[in-house]
Image 1: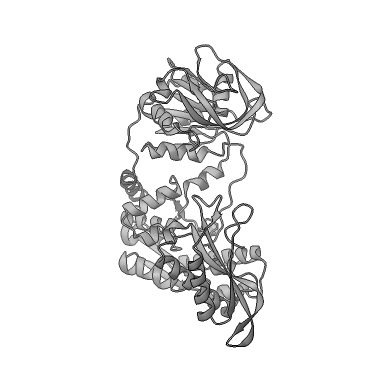
Image 2: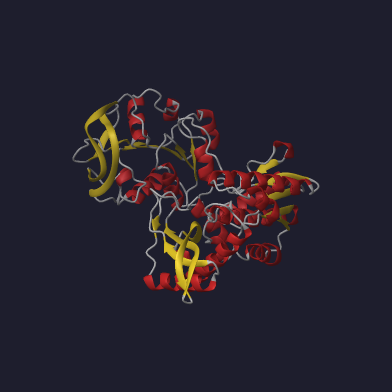
Length: 509
């Protein structure tokens, strides 16, 4: 196990993912973690992340200096290196020239953390300060044209500092450098896999739950689906899943969920038909934020009502992922990240008095998909495109009515069918249609029409933090447009959204 101490780097999750790619388990903790807690975690090594602050800035994050007395290897990256150097008696100075982006790393000797690494190799820099004087026992092991001490080490104490970022793809030999730290220096073993995760988590859930009942809000998305299957593997019929039909789902969505989880996977599933209740509450509401809040609040009310009908439930399960936990204990003590209440049931009333189970809370999104594959979930669940909690309500710009929902559902189904037929589904992060609050003039059957406009949105992305519009073939777009206009009554124009995120968002609302 490797402990990563988060000093606020934008890359801290990437460090963790790089460690886990080498099949080594790791956890991220804030700088305030005590040495006592670190000893309890018993890590084979510690990585100090980068961060945006200057080491001498007021309020700059720091961790207990006694970590350097634990006798275990420590790797400092960027700010983490500067913290190590300054804490152990060195000096950090403001650079005359800030170094950001690519730089050529000149390695003095191919040993230690640089064993097997090319002596001249591209690396990624992002710093204003740099090390001006090394602590006693340290030697410089690499430099760049602008930074004399681009890396340093005290091999006897197994302390290593890198001014550059080995975790980013721009550092060509970054994976090798991290592997050297994990295996040659920390002596870690490759024991982290989805198979071992399942075995350990099933045992933990069984010990925690015993013979009590567990309730889970199932959305049909990847996270809740994988959580449901993992919990079912652990406690079987003691798990009760509740699927809320909010009236703003895609075509055939309820049947898809029932067929998959109730019929195929034999999971104890309750379907709550609450569409009329949701639509009544958002009637006449055009503001997207009000829509989201109303739908989220109504979901909580419906879920709470259904939960009270189930006797003997003692546990509430959620599909919370590791990024949610990381964001909730930011390095600078900021507020917890707000998770939309309609995406999971974290906002349920305290009167429920249920104990929380979060079986995926130490996994990243890509690991959840790997877990789903290990649990034998089909690809159409594991690789399913994200769908917003408020559903089609935020893909209808303006008032949501049954008539407008029907138009959007039909258009959306046509797009999805064509996306799948063209083998594009798994190449896209998201693809969907949006019903605009506009009408345009058209000609159909030699007659003038004044009807709705549908927009197509398709994006590629790795993590949804940024996204680019998909360059779909023109013939494909022409076919989809032709089908929507001909088959969906009330639509006479189709447009394609060619904006990226940022500055736009993926969803329109």
